Image (tube, rainbow, N blue to C red; front, side):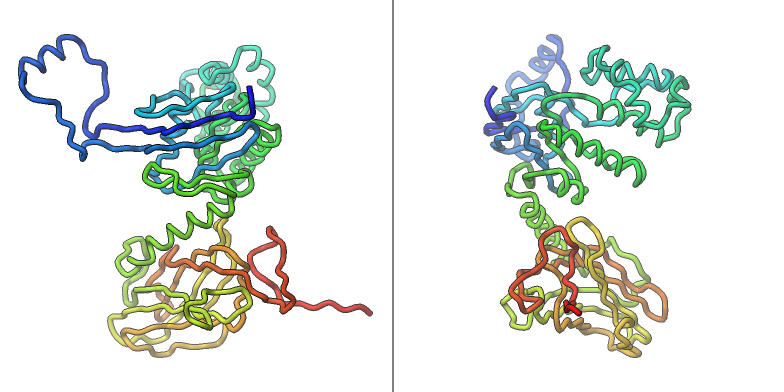
Length: 409
């Protein structure tokens, strides 16, 4: 079988906007011909949407691959092509091995059937043999935590119970190649953690996994390599951390230019953030761990403002809070600021470890929220000598460098 699990060559998928895809009878063809015998079929380019464009990838057996990108980038379309749900318009995809898909949790469930009956029905639709389902039945029920209700029609299940059972069935597939699309976006935090553990077990078993998710922590923990899709094309490939950094940078830069006009914000509008900029001690050299750094926030208010509180939150690639800075914490009061200007936050020694960080901005005036924008900016921190020893902590030990010392006694 060789070492290649999936070989994708010049793959493209095109949809015609506004056209209902259906089978046409002979009478439909004859009717169209009689109505407009001399009219050519419209082929205007603005009626076509290329969901995938000229994609070429090779995925080895045993690799765990992450697909990341914004909504509409083509990630789910690619998985549907590989699952043979839809056919490609151009190119080809060659798959070596049995394929299992977790694309839509709950496929095959019927509300009038019991949990037990739906396990067998959904399992069969997903490609499991009856003997496989019987062998895994107890494990599926235990994973879903619905043993008491297994003989109750699923129409009486809560949404959480329904999702748990649906995922449990799909997660017990045993294919050589597993395609997973956003299954961790459902359920509560405890269930998502359980799903992540199950996906980790699948990966450790040596199966090939292609995983689509907006959960960067899950991508980082599960995937060896990643591919970044944008407008149907692969724009970056490589180590997961590097591709994630590129993705977050692209997202931040696209939003950074329109901070002043963004609508996804909260507050009464007495102050509005217009621009977020990062500068180092020496302009043009970038921001380095352990060096001086300044963050400038341009704003506009409706009038001179009193009793202003402003803060910045830094978030790492996993979406976890990495650091927090505010004027109140350091005892710097803004009793009165002019209607338009800049507020500067200065770090004498920047403690953020190398990596990409998103920044959220928050402001209150007299205790009332004036403006609050998440992902308002982006900070890319480079290697620096925080400790003066030429060394930094290894990866995986947090997002900040902590000043400390050692001695013996």
